[in-house]
Length: 412
Image (cartoon, rainbow, N blue to C red; front, top):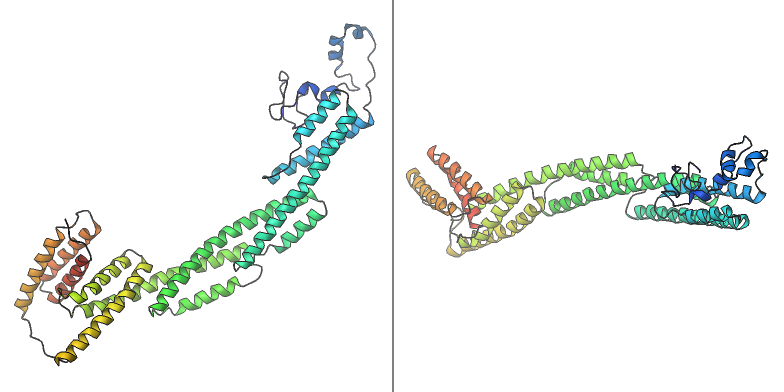
């Protein structure tokens, strides 16, 4: 019995009648039928099978016929091609069934039939391999074209040209190696490009929002322009794309630093404006709510939401200021009209009453909520400021707390 399958060349124990991989009946193996060599190997089997032959002289080995030699050569050729074709992965052709059929036919003495089956299998394998290589080459060309349309030119055209020449020249094994390496590079570049596109989208969104709010970006604009120029370069390699991605990440970080600083400064200016209005001033309630909302978004790093709230807050502040100016004109009071001066004792009494009122409101909030924890911290801050007679700071802290609470629904 053969020690390895003539089809898939997997080891086969002597007691097993079929290959565990391809199922080929090992008793019909061509190599097994030819195991009697000129050195006398295999004669023990013949002697045990026929007692009469033990008394006769050893017979000379029968030379294989020309057709059998051709079958053997074609089988070796097919097995060699299958070794690299299987490495192509998805859609790889397989002629194992035809190989089994040919082996059985030859074992049964139908060598001519076996030769025809092997020739058909050889032609089929070559045709299917060419089709697979051509199809995968076309897929790579389409992917390269899609990359160019998306705004980047990958330095892969030389590999594609070499692959095309190998496919058209019938150099299947060389084409298979080139194909796998080019597909690997293409997949990696596409993945890196998708990541960079995500960074660029975030940068463009934040730039637009900053521009709409009039936030100066300075050197960031120059950084973005340089990124775009680098992407227009022809024949980008993987390392160059990685360098651009690192620069984009740095630019995005600069935006995340510049925008919050500008928003904090603007919110501080709006807070001064809102302090001109009493806490129970109904027309300013919307602006106070938006101010609290923008501050909360900013603290949690939600820049897009913070920018949206500040944009709406600007409109509300503008309406408030226009309304105040119209009212002053209507009643004949100028913006510099004198207002009663509050004594320190009166201010302290007013702030204490406001603090007690807001503390009661805080106790109605869900105890485990973020708002409750933030409000409690502000109450403690107000208490410390009042104890130290820092009345202006306490007044501002209470105003911030009231705006925050006004944005929350009343409990139960």
